[in-house]
Length: 241
Image (tube, rainbow, N blue to C red; front, top):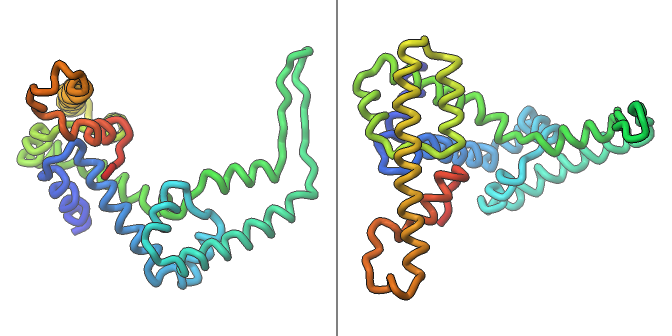
């Protein structure tokens, strides 16, 4: 049952006509988690304790603001800010330990509890933390299905490739989860899909730029009209409208 729960969104994403099916899975998962956070869950004590502690990354706080539940977001930010202010005040009086490096140009080593805490808060996100284990299972399901589901292997090979971020993540997953023989086959297919489709979109983008030359004004657009948003998907694994 658990395998099927992860297989369904993977198959659905690879059946779509898109530049990166892994992006499709990621964005759907992201939307689900934003809806979860901005629903009634923000009033649950356990959830609120976590959001107070870790906060949200820049990307997800923007998505939450666009959700329109301004009261819910305000309440979460209020208690998060109260929590961090209290923590920061408690650390302000703790002295930093500075160790000088050797020589005139030696780099100093600084151990400062407040700076360390601020780095942790600035790099943490409740939505990211909630999504990542599920997304990892999606990646595991892709390599598992490639090995054990002939129908999925054909679906995989018919895709339009992947963005650079998810190309990297799939390679990492393959190295960790696949046996050598099937790993070689998977990586060959993955590499070919990535580079052939990245080149396809690059060519479309080049023609898109060439169309701004008056000499090409009357020539057909070919497949380049939406080349810019498709290129952004390939390079930055994000959707633009």
